[in-house]
Figure 1 (cartoon, rainbow over the protein chains, first blue to last red):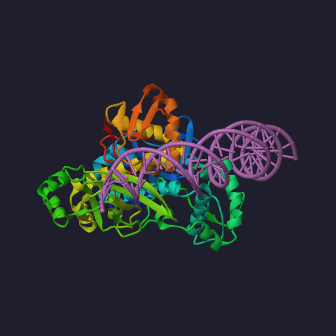
Figure 2 (figure 1 turned 90 degrees about the vertical axis):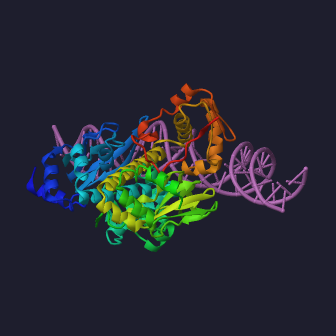
Figure 3 (figure 1 turned 180 degrees about the horizontal axis):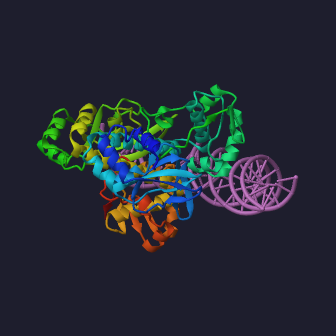
Length: 247
Length: 247
DNA sequence: CCCCGTCCTTGACCAATATCAAGCAAGCGT
DNA sequence: ACGCTTGCTTGATATTGGTCAAGGACGGGG
């Protein structure tokens, strides 16, 4: 494993406050590995052996049932995923696959469980991280139940814009089919709904998003911090999509 | 506060392993109170001042946005709710109201945060509880995205039946409108969908549910432990509906 | 440069779900 | 017991979202 990987991991909210000795021990049992694009890293239902940390690339978390599939989140560097399954020593609830070539750090779940029992600082970090994850999924569920698909898309675009400081032009960072699945609709529906949003102040051409009338868009989906975030002190890994890039 | 209340709280997974001294201190700052039916205990967005423990009665957790409302969970004795908001010292994501006359124990969030920083056992319990809550919401979200309304209802009824050891006859414990809202549909849709489920092996008359053909019902919605639970060692407060009663 | 695969879009159609409105039934207080 | 409220059901209709099928755009590899 590269030395600067360790530094990056060490700076994650989850690991930054623990004792150095414990961190070192945790990392001793861990190993880094690079995976090609499109590889299934985790299959839902498998026992949770490793906490995963994305160092480079991106990973999709998705769920399936009876042949249907839906995206639950896209995880980008540097953050962790499937912490809860590791802690409970329970089967993964979601599958994971690389969206592109990705380098991951795998930390044995058993080490993890052992360490937070004797490092109070790490326990507190874990608590904070989990509480953040919980709140992020609750927000996601609220969005699904309280908004229709046009509203979910509009809110998603507004969230992207806001994460870039209110930019009126930006690019989508993930494929539309993935956004559609994350927002709980079909790609066809996403496509048509995006078109129909032109009349409330937003145009999408390919990856390019242009908010032509911010006030109108805001009136169409009044953003709500209790749904759209952000949360205070924000690890939300596991249930959101990456932010856009300006331009 | 009644002495036997303390004993019951002490037996909750969240509190059972902590040091007695810390438990006592936590309870010293806490107070019990009885509320009438239909009272709003918490309004979403308010600062999280107290961890709530339901001692008697039942409490609905719900969310709202732009005049729409949806039920997120019904909490029954003895369990806690809104733990995550208290931990993060962040605004509540959900509102709460009593469904019937209820007695609650209110534990100051600041005491909570202080205690798990110095009681490792309590920290571990908190971690386990939160991980359970997180997984419960993830399951809920999976159900919403992967199943249509008929399937969600059938799965809900099967879950009730299974929680009673596979009973073929049982009663619904909460109002249908509440079930509908929890499952993400209108009461009208629930009503019609229930009727249509007769052809796959389940009859509902008022509160009475009769599974007339378990095999057919199971074939219609193959239960999935990764959606329908149960999880190992199961605190799931905050995101489910209560179990039924046989008969 | 062109072919090919992948993703996105579009159209036509259909299914699922919501809405509106009315009627019904059970529970409660007077 | 009566009337009232509340929740449930049903019907008619509108809207939303899904499905199927085809065509178009874009990008990577030969």
